[in-house]
Image 1: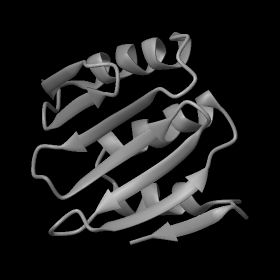
Image 2: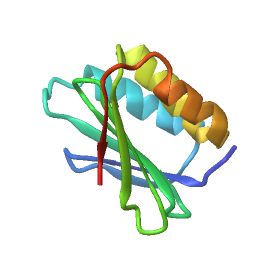
Image 3: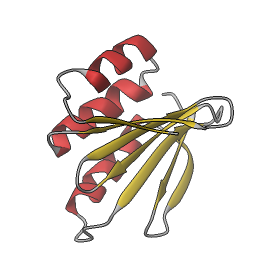
Image 4: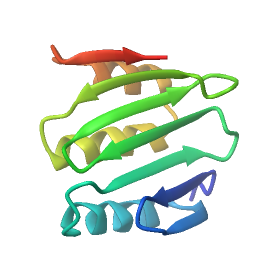
Length: 111
């Protein structure tokens, strides 16, 4: 299992060197938690990319040498967010970018 990822939440949980099962478990908790402003971050241990997922399905892809590039979409559902996370942790960058932007008219860029 790939353990090259970390997880943080805005309710105080933080885990380093997590595997796919731990990420999946945290996603289930995230979408069940009764906290409308919940935020979950999943990042790679290289510090070059991360996902920031909001309870309202806004997903931000953060990347760059200084983590200063940010692309954002409004996902359609918790399942869509989970699919993006699964592709993200497979480290298939081109597939992730294609899925991230697929069919989204609500794309906004933040720098």
